[in-house]
Length: 343
Ligand code: X2X
Image 1 (tube, protein in one colour):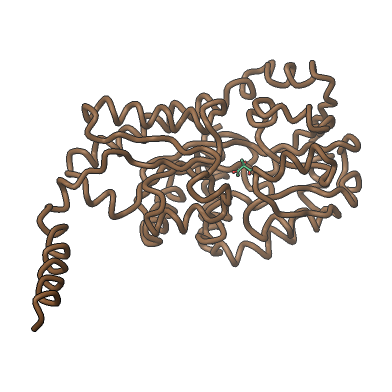
Image 2: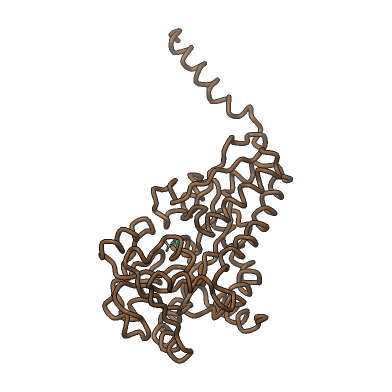
């Protein structure tokens, strides 16, 4: 063997041997990357901040988390977040069930139109048997689910007219995100849905490329959607998206059991606080957030039960169709949990 070849081989084998010297559990990274769609100006990002701070404090800095809002680790492509998490491009995340539903079809549950009539119904699902079942599904899909948070009830806004009946949606170009379920829902209502990321949605509203969108009121106000022509807002509460706090499996396994428990408890504590923040302004009797929105010259339309029912009827075939995709047993369990909720 030539000397150069021998030296080359010797070097290569040393390089290969090196990583094996470090035992898995002590190989903590100097920084863990947390993916989020929205930053701390929104309840969603506040949840990330709360989780990261609790973990840093309770581990005396052993686990140091940095926030990456705008799903910047995946160039803003929010429906790729779950795959990136599984692959380890992302270490941890607080994600919306909507954005992960293309990969985890059961998460479409929360997007079934009019499944959850009130906040007690959301809680009955996430904090009950349905939540447990979905955590099992997420675990089997390759991530470690730790806690629930909340984005919120998604209300519809547009630049053209007040929406009181499904007919008012006819022909409106509505930006939607996530799974094809949204295309079905808005097509059933006579609208013209178009899928795009949140990053693309705001310029599209500003330019008039789309007429409307649906998002929680906390996002509507913090993103100042009235400044991008969203002058008509209808409260229909057709769906709500919970958030899920998760960690990549390899990262999770690299931590000591004690640190895992700290991260889990911190997620549960941050999740509770985050849900309170997400509901602020919309659960009080006088709904202060609505006043703030109306003060910007926005028409706020509240539907009577009969008016709302017309939307329920129009979307019922979509609900039925997607019940089988989500899993009929899971949907039935959800319906039962909603019916038995404590109001
Ligand atoms: O893109 C949206 O509409 C948002 C911000 O609500 C989600 O990420 C689901």
